[in-house]
Each structure stands twice: as C-alpha cells, then as structure tokens.
Image (cartoon, rainbow, N blue to C red; front, side, top):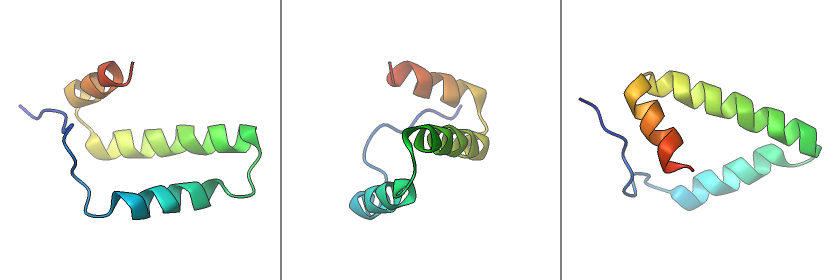
Length: 61
C-alpha cells in the first residue's frame, strides 16, 4: 500500500516555491484561487491513489 510521503522529498523546494509564487504574479485573488484549485486537481490526478489523497486531506486540516 502506498502511503503519503510527509518527509522532505524535493530536491529544490525553494525553487518550486519561487516558481509557484511567479505563477501567481499578476493574477487577481479569484484567478489565484482558481489556479490553486487547478493545480491541486492536476497533482491529485498525478498521485491517483484515493487512500493517499485522503491522507493528504487529513494531514492538511
């Protein structure tokens, strides 16, 4: 069974954060919220495992 990875697992988290912030640049609050929703759905589709997604939801509360 696949489990949610909660330990640091990114080679360059600061680079990803910078890219994420840049992706929001020039967007209104509503556009940023819609972008975040789309990003979450794209990443959830990539994960694809309902149990892992449920763990992620619980961990994010």
